[in-house]
Length: 65
Image (tube, rainbow, N blue to C red; front, side, top):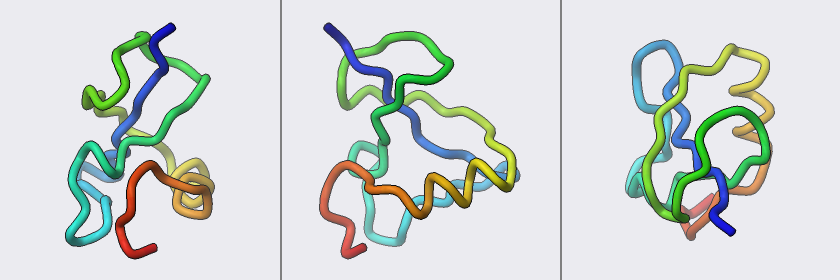
């Protein structure tokens, strides 16, 4: 079953860590959004609080975090 994959877009600018690809920075979530194949990029605007929660969570891939 496909997982939901989200690339965080905060304030109109990408916030993925430097050196991170979109695929690495994609985070699997069970929240809102269309179900897509793992690795497909889906952008979604998030609020400040959710952004901070995402930044404190694990992300897919090795981005030196």
